[in-house]
Every structure is written in structure tokens, then in C-alpha cells.
Length: 87
Image 1 (cartoon, rainbow, N blue to C red):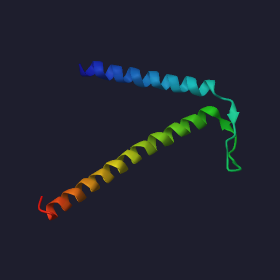
Image 2 (cartoon, rainbow, N blue to C red):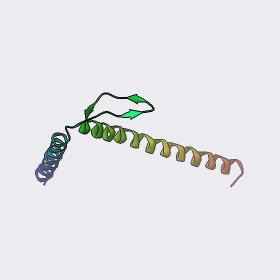
Image 3 (cartoon, helix red, strand yellow):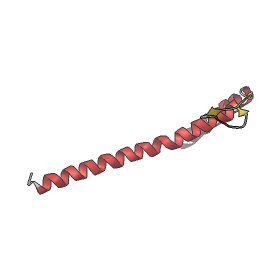
Image 4 (tube, rainbow, N blue to C red):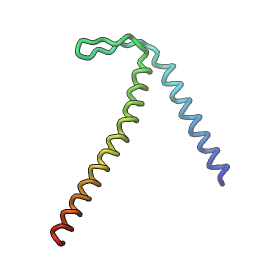
């Protein structure tokens, strides 16, 4: 059973790599991004899209962890207040 799971995982990774490779090869036209009159050097569209994906994949979990920590602090403060009030 474990070998079947490994085979499916390997197949999924290879399929994902093929899709990314196909995407990169199909999007070779250069684009220059401009933000507040600052212009980045021209790079292929695939580089821009994949960079945005990686940045999003990094920022998403960080924001999620921040939200969890904030919720834990609120719960602890609420519990502390309840204990002080004798509830």
C-alpha cells in the first residue's frame, strides 16, 4: 500500500513539473512591469507569474499564523479577565 502511495505521489510531482515546464515554455514573451514610475527590466511572463505565486505561497501561511496567534492572545486575555472577575 505504501508503494502505491509513493507511486501516486511521484506521478503527481512529475505531472506538476510537466505542467510548470509547459507553462514556462508557452510564456516566453518579455514583459516589463511598471509601478509608481519604476520600471523593472523585461523578463518572460512566466517568471513574473511564478514569482508572484511563490510570494503568495510564502505570505499566505505567515498571515494565517499571525491570525492564529492573535486569536490565542484574545482567548488568553479573556480567560485571564474571567479568572480575575471570579467567573
